[in-house]
Image (cartoon, rainbow, N blue to C red; front, side, top):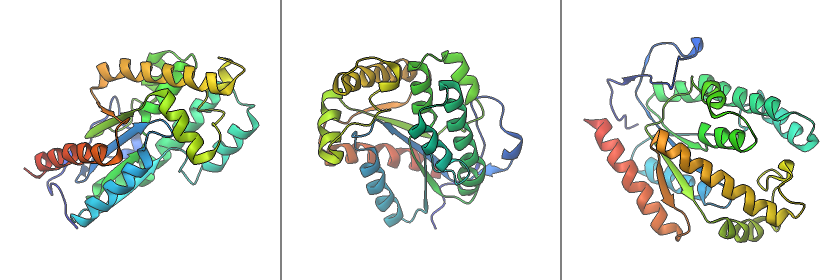
Length: 239
């Protein structure tokens, strides 16, 4: 297995680390890919994984609602639509931190490349659009690891509609922001909600400095851009 830097680095978080995180050095690298459903996020991550593994790296995935502790509970809560927005936020945060402690950090200690299929930025953007104070969301995720690079696949809301209908023949209730009462029409609500999410990401980008990738283009062009960024990051890590 290829290891970017055997000396490793001290863990960096946005605030104080969790007690469970310890003080050991991290050998691997953490890359986050953000974007709405239909942005090509999962497809690009799959291709990046194959490319990295062919280059000798061991790859680990993480994403939302993948903690064995909470994944089913969150899905049930979403289906029931009974929880408050704050309670839902806390469930997602617990899911994230469970993966951070039990999956992400051990993988980084072992030298894996961790590819995050969405990270805290999506969770923060969703919470802010639903009325949470930005400072509250920053405090909630202050113990998260700072990724080595973050890429936001930005796609026009109209294009997202076409891609979601092509894939699922319908729009998702939550990805359409139907819980916010933006419109009784799901199509219109989707366009409004995704526009709000994109504007929130735009404000967050100024604070966190992640890379915005034009995901309206074809897959090959997006993949080349992502590989170029990862190649540069891994070359820096190897020095």
